[in-house]
Length: 173
Image (tube, rainbow, N blue to C red; front, side, top):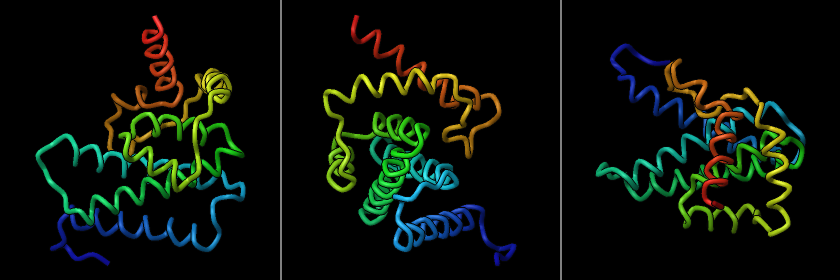
């Protein structure tokens, strides 16, 4: 499939495009409404990859093309849609989506709310807090595709939720 002359960057880009294509084809053929716990990890990887691309484009001098920026936004919307729909079946997906939503820029959040149909109503805050407390012991790994072993524990769902809750408490005080 790949020759020895291919660079690691080219191989990674090709594999990333194939991965996104498979998720998009799955969505077009099956949708995300049916309960499918297997898709959680794929949507998790896809969402964090798109989010990281968008954050890098905003915070560094490295400019990406408008098409690549729009692709990353589209991918983030697709992954958010999948996590939102699966979140109706699994607390885990809902918790991951809340972490991703908190990391989004306001314009991306508006797009996701528009296309996915998700909003945080006033009454949902208490329910989200309750689910967050429930998931605070979770060992599920978030966004660890390229992290070294020393960072894995910090990126576990329970630890991320504890940090998020602590910063909310500090903001209230």
